[in-house]
Image (tube, rainbow, N blue to C red; front, side, top):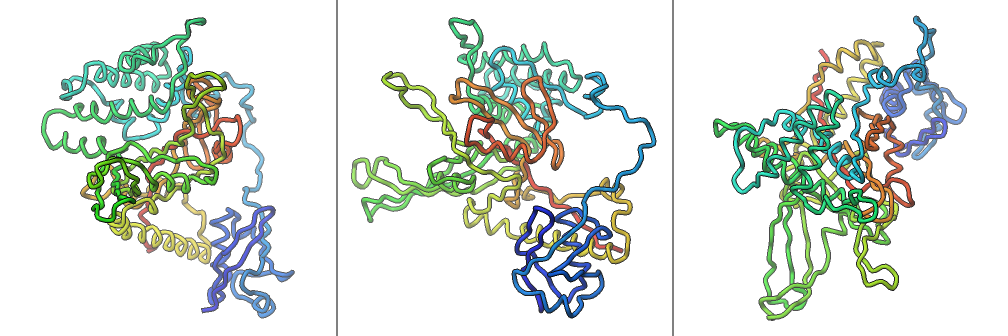
Length: 497
């Protein structure tokens, strides 16, 4: 089969290693370019070394110029051609604040009650998880306490319900103050005030995030009282929807006779450890899964060095990843420990694959659904190419989009899990400053592909993917502290009739 890996340049953008099969008509390759660039077939002009390429056949002059890593030039605009407006344009600058918010569907932010941005950002990221948001809105708190849970934690979930309901109505201020009181009851040091100003001290958003998730995992179990089946369902879908399961193996480096041991851990996150050579999220997570520790050796009756190797045995539907940016160290000549921040730039992806961090057993279990992702992408490309050749591309696209169905993202026997390892970013909690106990926290929540809301307390604005990618660190700008990934949907693609 005459298949080549080729390059295509479109304006300032270059695509490498695109697959070109000259047994197929050029329109198939052009459809691939359409999926990458958005340039419709009728506006594409594809050339190689000055030779134009049609839709139906590869001419001899063109075939002679096609070689591995050869460069094609693509010309054409992805934007629709402008049309005259039917109605008079009303600029957003001329609208009232309320009308502009309704037009843009801008959600309501949360007022800063005095260094409470850590709490506001955590709440907005929790609302980004649809299943949790739904259950919190439905929470009544009338089914009694969960065994082992204190009254204050149960009451905090009830206040979160009241706050979320009021946010839907865009009137959350009283409920926000009551929620803060409830949070400070559960975590007393969150109520600490600065002695000079009398304002609440800044707190660590990661601590707040972890505490809220821990409480929700337990309190939401009690909201569907009555029969055992419904409670069991909640146990699986909510108790484990954010839970990572890890296995840790320990091998003594000082005694060959000591057997390797294994431990298991439930966690609410994976961690990205930042060292000098860490430039990407994947590297930072890998660093944290393998290392050397010191612990008591039963064979040697003393502390010894062990190699610790960890692997994920269960992925949750919604995966939290923390950048370990803060550490405690001494400040100058002072003996006091202070929180310091690692400002290093560590790139992260809008789409994330956790496969490499999983145990061999989990990898094997995920392979069938991962193959299905590839099959679906190939089938969608084939359907798209067929529509192009039949001249029906773009017709009834809005109707088709409203009828899209998706495969389950969890294993059948483990609701609330992720069955593929594929994720897409849905929220980022950032910090700007040099210490976890100072600076400013902001939440960035995805509305839809390519569009995000930036929640800077009560100031809510829309941003793009490009702004999210700038949150990787490297200076004094907002930098990612917590990433929240949700399951990447797998579309059910039906064969064309």
